Length: 393
Image 1 (cartoon, rainbow, N blue to C red):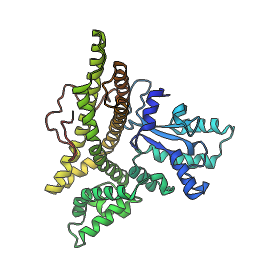
Image 2 (image 1 turned 180 degrees about the vertical axis):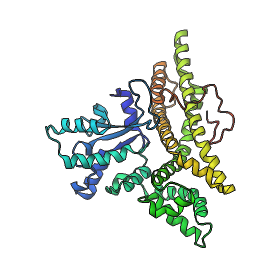
Image 3 (image 1 turned 60 degrees about the vertical axis):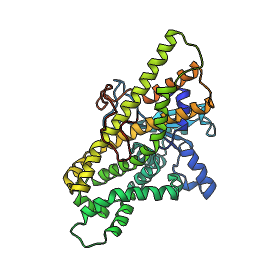
Image 4 (image 1 turned 45 degrees about the vertical axis):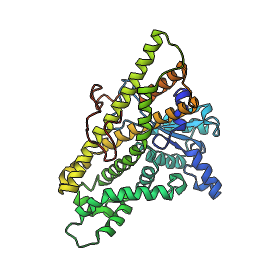
């Protein structure tokens, strides 16, 4: 179980790390008055909160194929989740044990258990709870909960559609280059089909043009859509990350007079936190570099093969970007809480140490296989998403 301070950060997280089922369930009940419209059949799940988090196994390793786990948190008091509760890492076995414990029965209601397991598997199949990604995952699984559970405002949907159309257009041109069809109309239709991806047949011209295996094409295209969405998310986070980095570099001084050992401890924590932020951002830049280069090769050189090769291996990029996005989102939440607490005043030693301690826990240790050399500078232009800067830190 996570400690209380980290729980508070998780509870304040955005959709990269948190999905508040209870919040949406209360909205469904208020707006529809229909209990059958709730997402789950089991009462405690309809009041639960789902978290995404890195879970390290007993050998202190992070899974390379699935670096992020889904945690199901059941608060003791649904209206006061910060007061504590019970949680477990999602798997079918763990869910069955917790299900039996919560319903206080020796026998499992198979129909309810099976239905709820299917919905939980959808949440577990993606690296974040970002609305468009959750909606896409449920659509692909042919599960149709109330649209309230996706929480996509018309304004956000328009922004995402515009962003997706800009990315998809070169692919449509490649798919229909020998055709006399209306390209702009094809872009509109294919964007809609990709965002509600249900079967390979509906996007077969694109699958064939990109030389994808039809048996894995839906997963590949879903991962690519996720990566494309992360461009939008990372660009939105940049100003907050830059502000945090600048504060650590220039203004992280306390109002207290410090003993030498306190100054050294503060400096050590500061170096660690900023170093981890640099390492994590370098991962984002490195992971996105191949995507940018292969996509540009497709757009400007009509080189389909390089982009096709990237797509066929992009699932790990999708999960790694989602994992790092979650770390950064939570770090910026901790930073905003810290700023509000200060109200423009210079912080005490205790408050700064508290912030650094939380950031250290949130940023964690680098994944062994993909972390860049800590000495590697981010000052040089190493590429990345078109809207990202490599010298953020």
